[in-house]
Image 1 (cartoon, rainbow, N blue to C red):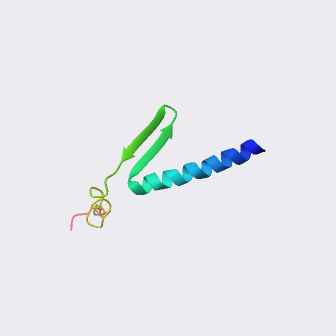
Image 2: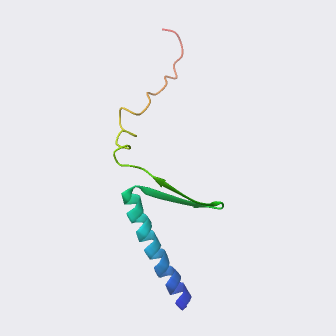
Image 3: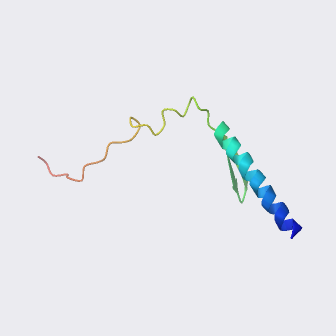
Length: 65
C-alpha cells in the first residue's frame, strides 16, 4: 500500500513539474525510443494560429460562372 501512495505522490509532483515547464515553453515527449524536449520561445509563436494565419477555405463550386 505504501508503494501505491508513493507512486501517486510522485505522479502528482511530475504533473506539476510538467505544467511549469510547459508554461515556460518547454515541451517534453516520451516515446518508446527515448524522450524529446522541445523549446518554443514566446516571441516566436505569437503569429501562429492567428486569424491572418488561417487558410481561406476552398470553394466546392467549381463550375465556371
